[in-house]
Length: 141
Image (cartoon, rainbow, N blue to C red; front, side, top):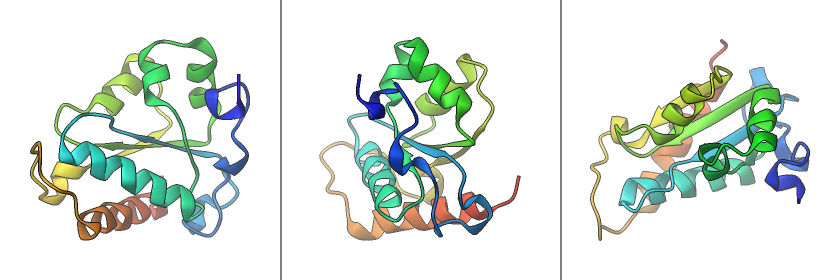
């Protein structure tokens, strides 16, 4: 099993200067994986956050599948950051079902972006989510 599949902490999971209060902490990023535009926005935003040094993307589907090693990796993280696309809150519901509370959560539709299929995603929308994520990550809790 590769390190991104939960066998051990991903190498790039330690936050850099992206979010000062969390610098040096293990942050795992999870994105909605639905079929609508808001899922694509969530995924692209999570990938940008990873490139910006805010943490490492991790597999939400593996938590949904109850893979013990993956659930333990999420449990062991200093913080899990969830980006849901819509009010269904699949990521949040998955974490809550496992009793995981070490997360912060944002939702793309809360930023005024409407859920739709066959609607192109814009860089501006992705950047809005990235900015909100960084703001949320920067909050002390």
